[in-house]
Image: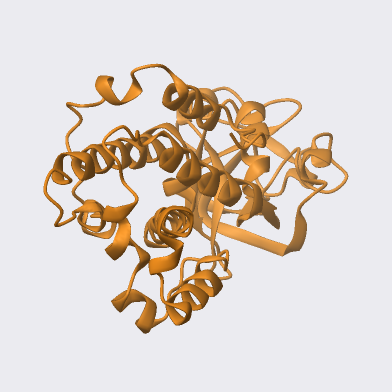
Length: 291
């Protein structure tokens, strides 16, 4: 199994897949039915006795996609259509590898070269010709009754791990993560984009760090292009979702950024930073219900 599964839910899912009798335990899992991930059709085969095997794979894939949606932040932080297309392509890449191993003499040279080229591209895009002639159409010759979905699920999970290790999102920071502040080193692998601001916000001083909540002022901060692999460290720092909540918010630049927003219950009695800038935290007045 891919050894770079650094984000704990991915490790847990990988361990679950590797457990004995995994397929039996998920046999009653409802099929995932969102249109963009209706991938079980690619496993339906015309050979007699193959349908039950194809269904076994379909249930396993449906289970995995559901786990990735509910146990990780990947569909929260990445465009869902992009995410599911990328994983479906990982399914087809696995199928093509099965065909290569089991039916290499039956694959036309032109088809083999086309599939090999497009499936080796680490992206969710496909040409029209590949869409019309997917490698999954010939999978029936490679699926045997004794096969289990484990290899396929591991291949798809490894693709999800690659996204976690390589994808970036934009983050707005306004306190201890800014340049020159005590936690800025957590953004060592991030690219500074520029300064920005958020409207309808109030900033409060909680001592060593600030917290913003919805209000009537303007919040000022910095924006960074960060790899997803930083997110678990930031979640721990911010105690998401209990103390701060990770949210997508539109900035005054018109760009939507990831921001850690606080809760009103946490700022009662704390000084408000009138300017909306953490760097001006010594210019304050105390919060009151009338503010």
